Every structure is written in structure tokens, then in C-alpha cells.
Amino acid sequence: MSVETPRLGSILPMPLDEKDLKEVVEKSRDWAIMHGAGMRSKTNFSKDALYFAPFVLIPSVFPRREFYKALELQLVLNEMVHWVAHNRIFLTEVLKETIQVDEFTGNLFKIYETVQDEGITQNLSLGLFRSDYMVHNSNSKIKQVEINTIASSFGGIITHLTKLYRYVLQELGHHDLAANLPENNALEGLCSGMLEAWKMYGDIEATILFIVEDVTYNICDQRFHEFEIKRLNPYVKVIRKTLTEIGNEATLGSSNELIIDNRPVAVVYFRAGYEPNHYHSQLEWDARLMIERSQAIKSPSIHYHLAGTKKVQQALAKPGTLEMFLSDSGKIEAVREIFTGLYSLDLDEFGDQAIQMALDQPERYVLKPQREGGGNNIYGEEIKDAILKMKDSKERSAWILMERIHPPISSGYIVRPGGPEVPELLDLVSELGIYGVIIGDSYKIYSNRQCGHMLRTKTSTANEGGVAAGLGALDSPYLVD
Ligand code: ADP
Ligand code: MG
Image (cartoon, rainbow, N blue to C red; front, side, top):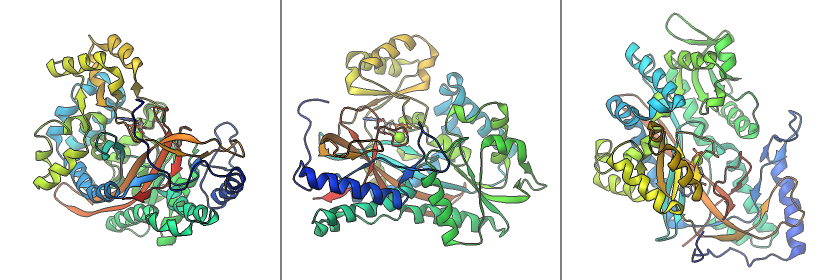
């Protein structure tokens, strides 16, 4: 991080008085545990116990104008992803080099081609997206990090955690400041999307199936979704299965209904399936294909999944591409503004230029493979080594180069399980996520809305801040003008 990185003000004078700090940390930690802001421990796993999820004690400052801009933009991004996903020529062209060298994306693409060639059984897709942003220093405007089209997480926990900050501010004698904490109904919004799709499926016996990992650490977030579905519609049954279980237990009915536990499935909600290690063998790939062939409405459908790849993100940033998917020039302009430099590393003249840029100034970029879930990107000097290794091989098509976003720094405290009673004051940076729900088919979009937000914060020197990965902390934006 360069020395001239601007600093954001904090909402309260920092550091806090040590006695106050200790007291509020203890109270807020219990508040988090008691309101389900929890995760299972990776080091001390037990289904009987939860640890609280790491969180930032005092909400971080975020520019109000950029926050509302991101909310508004979600509808445009939902629409854009929807039409990208429904353009076979575009997806095929954009991914054609990558799928030759990236086996995982290649396998997803094979499923896509199979169902496209067979004819799609379920024309509707359900998108539960999250677009992630960081404020970029140079002009204090948001830049998009990525858009998640599969397993967009934390909508459950964050909805509850937003309320923690009201309590913390009250405890510190500043309840008046709570007016700057925006409402957050992400959980209800996401679950309403699933229920709307469930209704469109049109069978009251049918279930909502969560595809889950073999071991779920982020259990509270997933269960919140399940319980919220039940709260909104007590007649709907939610079941949880791994891809392995689907491979062993599920069948397709005479009209391609997905049948598991003797009931048809209306909606499949993937909280796993985005990483190679979620597919232990061909069985799990067969399960994914079976789901895709079925009548169930998928979140995401295979084409939504592919539309969320980093390669597609990079292709959309090329001049003239957005125009293929959005007709309104205002919308196109607004989307273009959030893109930072994105470059292909394909074996051609443009790829060569990008390779040279990365070798000359590696600190300016992030090197990204086609992966989700955090911990896969390469930063700084290591970019050079990686590029020198792959420079002359086709493998480079599996990667994209992205300009590094430099967010402003704020001062704050992170409360972690096993952390000290009095946490130290840290330099922090934040990443905003906006949730979007969309339901549509190849002809039409039936529902399109924005449904809430999350903020994740990490120390300013960490490259990545995945909360589930153990680096970041949950947070909530405190809006300032
Ligand atoms: P993943 O699919 O693994 O979540 P991301 O593209 O979201 O991949 O990258 C993971 C993390 O890396 C982000 O949450 C962010 O902290 C950091 N990151 C990604 N791209 C950039 C960028 N262009 N500039 C700065 N940090 C970035
Ligand atoms: Mg991400």
C-alpha cells in the first residue's frame, strides 16, 4: 500500500478508552453469539458448538453516494448477467481458450453444452447474486471487484449483524449516530427470491434443495436462509444434500423432475459446487449434470454460473461488449464506470501486452484464475514469477489480469474468536457487497431487484479478506457525505 493512501475518518475518536473498549468488546461478542453471528470452528470442529464470526467493532465509514449508486446499479448488473448467460455464442467465444486449459471451467462448460444441445428442460433461472466493490482512492468512487453468481454468502448473518451496530453505538453513548446505518433486509430478499421461484415451479409438494459442502463451517448463514424460508412460508420443506448424496440418491422422473427423498425438487440453491474440491469424482459431476438436466429451477443455472466467471467479467470490460447486453446508454455508462482495468492473457497480441504490463509493474495488478471462494489470486512480486512460468504456454488463458484497487484506510478494531480482551487498533480496508435477485428465462425477466448489502473488512496489508477463509471480518457501512 502506498504511503499516500488517504485515510477515512472514524465515527468516534480513536483509540477508544481502554476500559470502554474492553467492556463493549465483551458485550458485543456475546451479542454476536446470541444472535447467531456464528460459524463452526475449523480448528475445533463440533456440530454442537458455534464460535462467533469475526466482526469489526465500530462500523466502517462508507461514502453514502457510492453506497446508493451500488444499490441502484444492482438491477442493471442483474439484467446484464442474465442476458450474458443467455447468449451461447458469446459464452462460447469468451470461454473457448480458457476451457481448454482450465479443467474445472471446462467441466462446467461441458455440462452447459450438453444441456443446450439436448434442449433446456427448465427455462427459468434464479439468480441470487452479490456484486462486490471497493472504493478506489484516486476518485473515491466504487470499483467492482467481481460479481458472484453462485453461493453468494453472508446475506443471513449480515442481516442480523447490522443490528449489532445499533447496540454498540448505544453502548458507547452515541445512539444518535445509528441513523447513518442503512436498513438491511438481505436475508428476506434472498429467501423471497427462492420462494418466488418455488411458486413458479408450481408444485406444493416440491422442496427447496440446498447443495452443501461435506462439512459446513458457515452453517449459521445457511440455516438463516432455511429458517427464513420456513418463516415466510411454513409449507415449504428445505433439504440439504451434498453433490455426493445427490449422485447416490437422486433420480430424474418421467418429466425430468429431480426426485430426492421421494419428493420433487422445485428449487436448487447451490452453496457448494463452485470449487474443484467439491467434486471428488465423476459421481459429483454426474450429479451436477443431473440437476442441470432436471426441471428444478437452479440458483444458479449452469449458464448463470458461467456468466459469473472472471473471464466473462474481463470480456465485458472490452470496448463495445456491454452494448450487446444493455440497450440504455445511461446504464452502459454507469456499468463502465465501475470497471477497473481488466486484461486477457490469451496467446495473442493483447495478451502479450498485458503480460508485459504485469512484468513491468506487478504491484499495480492482481492475477486471477477462474476460481471462487478466496485465496486463489496472486499479488505483487509473485505475479512476476507466475507470469514468467506460464508466459509461453496456453495455460495463461486460464487467468486474467486486473488492475489493483486501492481503497482508503480507516482505523478500527476487529473482534475475533480467541482474540485478546482488548483488541489493538488496526488499519483497515473494506469491501461492499450488494445482493441482487433475478428470475427470468431466455425471453423475459420476471423479477429483478436489489435486496440488501454486506460489508467485509480486513487489515490494510492483507491481500484478501474472506471471512469464511478467516482473514476478514464482517462489518456494516456507516454512511457519510
Ligand atoms: P473470489 O472469487 O475468490 O472471491 P475475488 O475476485 O473476489 O475472488 O478476489 C478475492 C479478494 O481479493 C477480494 O475480496 C479482494 O479482497 C481482493 N481483490 C480482488 N481483486 C482485487 C483488485 N482488483 N484490487 C484489490 N483487491 C482485490
Ligand atoms: Mg470475491
